[in-house]
Amino acid sequence: MMDLTYKRWITLNVWGIAMSMVATGVFLFCGEPFISPSVLWDPEARLEREILLMVRLPRALLGLVVGAGLSTSGAAFQALLRNSLADPYILGVSSGAALGGVLAYSLQLPYEWAPVAAFLAGLGTLFLIFFLSNRGGFLPVHSLLLTGVVFNSFSFAVILLLNALAPMGEAHQIFFLLLGSLEAQSLSSVVWVAVPVIVGVVALVLLSPAMNLVSLGEETAQQLGLNVARMRKIIFFAASLIVGACVASAGLIGFVGLFVPHMARLRFGPDHRVLLPVAAWGGGAFLVLCDWLSKELLTQAGMGSQLPVGVITALIGGPYFFYLMRRSA
Amino acid sequence: MDLSTQKYFYRVLTLSSFFVFFCASVQASERLERLVSLKPNLTEIIFALGLGDQVVGVTQYCDDPPAAQKIDKIADYVHVDVEKVLFKQPTLVLGAKENSQQKQINFLRDRGVKVELYSFQTLAEILSSIQNVGSLLGHSDEARILGERIPVAIAQAKKVIRRPWKVLMVVGLNPLVVVGGKANFLHDVVKGVGLVNVAEGAGMRYPYMGIEDVMAARPDVILVLAMGSEKGKGIPFFAKYASLDAVKNGRVYEMDMNDFRPSPSLTRGIQAIGDLLGGSPP
Image (cartoon, rainbow over all chains, first blue to last red; front, side):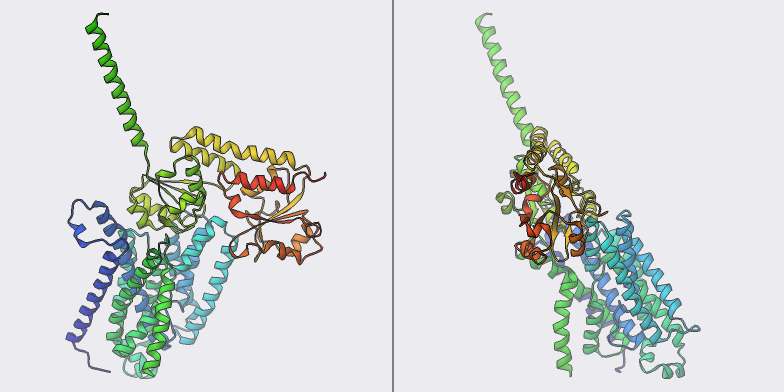
């Protein structure tokens, strides 16, 4: 593990900020139709300015927040479970949140309640999984994994049941929640998501030195003075809080939490003090660019539709991931 | 009246006529809308009201009338591209309460766009929605005439169908999805033309039905409204079940789903049912 200096850490973060700004710039200005940055000060371009600031900007910011959240929580879960296949959805909080949203649609509650229901259900799931996995104050890895996987399957079975029983006019709302989307957001709703995600990401970044110790093995970490049980709980709560907020606002967007941390690990090594910030900035930029593609591909083809962003994340991430794996092997 | 008074009178009359004409044309131009339709049936209604030239955005599936296909696409069936809608600067967006993403509708309304949603689940709702769209767009009389065609078509079909056939109306083959009796305009049509919907008892709009249930229901007629890749597969699908009366008697028919949209084109579908089942011996 390479020595990490403040200078290197700050340089990496500056690069991360620059990358996120480039991705946001592409999303804001390079969409169809092209909007010039000059509309920001052109008094004649009221419509373009409104679309830029009230339609594209909240969507890009939500992409940054959700991408950063999913990617960082993915990296944290991989450290927590010491399993490189772990992703933000593995411990069931996401499916619990999705179930909450689906339940709100099925009960035909006012639309605004769906994200709230999803977030509350995500939090409820978090405590349920914690309660079920807890063994005398410890969170054993196998117990967490089993509980999460079983809860995922159970939640999706209930979602399918609700989908089958839902009125036909509501079934597509459920479908779109499961597909995931970043569009049609106001700036205020982005702030509501950003608060828990930023708190969670900062907590995880602060815990990154401890994650390094855990990666040496639990026994070694204990011998080095780390309270592994306590650290696990904090990581579990912080990452789950992030995932609950992301799913409540954007639905289920797959692959970001698996692909981006692995990319960062292949490029920057396993040091979590570097990995987590890089994953956060990289995840945000990656999701914004994927969302830009999902928005533009069909538009350029003259169709009045957009692709689900999760399709793009998987289509880009999958093959590139295999390529990197082959090359590094 | 002396000559100067007469001249003065004519001048005033001419000027007044110009003024009235000017006001009328200003009012007419003010009535011009920039309409966006979020459903194919609404596009049909707007065109049928003679307002097709005021439509600036439609869905990918708006193909009736053909002129609608040339208008810019801003949505698919359930997903609306809110950015494109805003770029069109619509004065009015028309959508359906069913199959719309509330998130997108709220977003447009928050941005100051006027969005009106209509219901098209039952026949009564279709008729009132046609009337309400017409009234909103200042074409109340045309909407009334348009709406009246549907009950007239139903009455005509009822006249020629002289037997209360037991009918199963199918909208999907795999899985088998049928027209139920709850809040469904297709059920209202079946009932209206004097037929019996064998799936009326199902408490859903479009229930799933097992083939065993179909056999138990013993429909005399099966009407398949196939969509997409299932087009042309309705008759071969049911041919496998030769014990069904509808199959034995050659009364499995495939119909064009486009004739059964909740719009003025519904009259074509009703007429087609009348043509198929009319004149049969009681």
